[in-house]
Image (cartoon, rainbow, N blue to C red; front, side):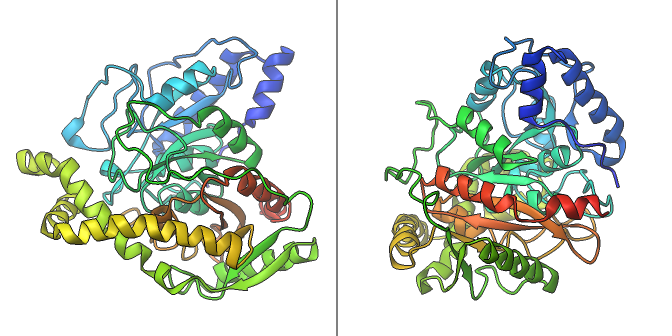
Length: 444
């Protein structure tokens, strides 16, 4: 196992720095030392500075002393941003991405740039899974998930177009949150598909994710992709005043899952019911089952527009998966793209009405992946269990719950209604206390 000892949580770092029992420099140096020690095997970072670039912020700043890993799709003025591609090797942005600037303003230290698949698509980087280096950490936010799981940083940023936050978080045994579409401004983040791209976070616990998102959520006038969802979110609801009502799909939207993955879902549902939750069998409206197909159309066409010129100009510097995606997008009729865009809005509204009104649910409890992380580093896993929720723009949280037969982590995914992120995270924190994850880790 490549794991080091767990990093202190965001809360523990904040409390220690405010109390004066540790300094910002000490905390950042500890993370930097761990990153360097684990890098030869883990390969979580594509760039680490020669020494830490410490943000010596006011100790009362909300992220003072917190070291953060930044996916190499996000611009950093003091570090290269190459998008995981040799076509942009050595690229130095003029300024930080909006979300990176937000982190620095809150006192965080950017420890380094984490590995991404090329342009957040399917050409894997060198990162290994912290639990077993013969297995993938998932993608495309490979390095961010691995850096948190290995105990290097308590917070890392990722992006999700299909399943690139939720799936690697599940494979690596950490908390991953993909908030509602448009929650975090994407200015300065390389797009793959403006209709689908979300920014998300990796942490070791839900409370840290809530704290980070409270700082990072925001809009920016320069974000080139306005939200397709203009609905205003409701308040946190009354889940604190009544038992949560959680739907369990009778058939997973991504297809059949492994026996071990099904077992942890079933066992968690039993524990939640025993602690007062109402667990309800659910069937999605039939038209929602086509969400992944429509998402594939959107990503192909939009990737062709974004990356087509590079593919034409420098084909030798671009991977085969990106080239194939661009070619697919160029071959699709404009009418197919327009239809997919229209259906995205319609289906998002249909899902929210079904979840909150027809089914009367606070959330769905679903699989985040087929099962354990696949063996090998040439395939980052199947995103089918995440793609529909990304297409719909709804919030999703993955929580680690146990281990599969290969000794690798298994997670579960909670999905809520669009813009009801606070309610979903509150529920996730309640569920987190009943997963048995800490016991499972301690018994290993």
